[in-house]
Image (cartoon, rainbow, N blue to C red):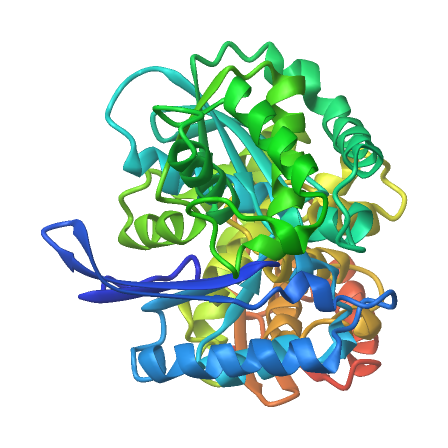
Length: 506
């Protein structure tokens, strides 16, 4: 799990963006609720070009990326845990877990790294861009072209209303259609067609979203803006006409190595044409005539969210509440399960080393959502629920957090699914198992779904030993619960837990 939902307020914060093209880090001081940037670091790592067919990393790209993170780590390693938030995007989403790069990257940086889904990336980009724009009630279209993906967002003020992540970026487009370095009509047409097909499923949705202004972010779009203005093709931002003139100029150069454009850096040149192809397709298919360019993006969005300035509401809680409503969860029953789970957590927190506040939050969310699979089918509903959590768009949640939540919901009843837990990163396996045990016991106590008060259940834990105590003769008068506890002891034993039940509450 990450620390994304338990940030403390620190005087100095840092955000790290591990993109498919560049790695960025921004360090800012917080004063009177305002962010004052004190350091920026950027390196063109091109992580995406090192992605192999079997979803690993080429050794030379791995070495380049880890060396960059070691340098970043020199700046932030001494900062307190929770004051640095690092996220990985498209390429890290594709890397197979057993590749081991993420573990090495975290060691190099000295802080946890979250891998976020495309739509979560879009939300954070919009947040960063919105804070950098003048106040106003206009609805905006925000476009961010990264190395491996392009994010489209429509929103008003600080609230995104539409979010989409498309599988195309300046690095991936270059590798696929311009890898030989030639810039021809045929290659550009193929790139344009591919980009059009990616945009097509969401084209009408975004064209009809009634936005008034278009804003671009990311290094690719800033580089295009700098070039068209330096060449005199646009006086303000990027226009469709200036983009057409840029494409014509690129075709005249014929090869990437021959490109000579004012304001285009040598670092940007190898993937510039791929980025232009993506932006031209976005202009064409979304009906953009002119685009402003923002200097703020994902990393600034991370910082603003860490300060708590993004919203008076908790993004995670909003996401959970949305699922509760969407899948018509029995909220009264879920609330009873949650209360019991929290009571058990309070008794086990020290012995099971669950003091991180996010563990408590994760248990609360799992209790609220443990029955969402009933919307699919009562049979195997815990499996359906896990699938929904793992594959839903949950604003604020990293991919790993969704995997943890899904594992808890998958494991809240029937056999204890050790395979599910073993697929989680090693550093979160044990705490997730223990939280799931507490959830299982809370669900079991409320199996009858009665609104009547349940007895105070006492729990004493020590490593894999669990001792439950019920008051007086309560278990004798509830034989079904007693039978279920005996069955539960067998399920937990298969996972290495030893549970004893006693009626002596002393």
